Length: 168
Image (cartoon, rainbow, N blue to C red; front, side, top):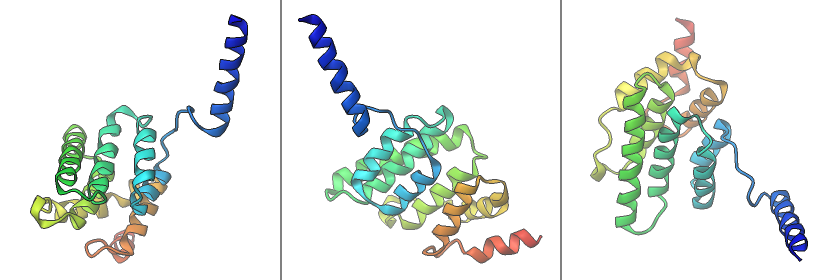
């Protein structure tokens, strides 16, 4: 009887893995930026799971950005503020630990640009822009692609900022 239970359990585990049920997700930057762009609650929640496999030093920053993105999607104001505050703390903590992380400055810039005035999260836009433009060529291809993609709808960052920089 015990052998049958183990066999049944094993079968269900294999079936769950085949469907992607309990298989851990791996963090992928390109996918992370697609999720940030999408603004879909379900994909954000799924990406929060994937971010758990991101490098430890960077995990907080990615989680913070996702939480702040999620804040803009929930309906209740109290929940919005809660998600935004949690995300802000995580992203800012990650930036304090690694202030030279240009990618986190880009994430903060993208959030600052779209944050409502009431949360008073706009003070670093110009500094973040300058750092992103300055260090653009040293970023990974996934992040550079995300930045150029973001430029399509940004009032702060423009593709021309990067083409002029590459001529210097």
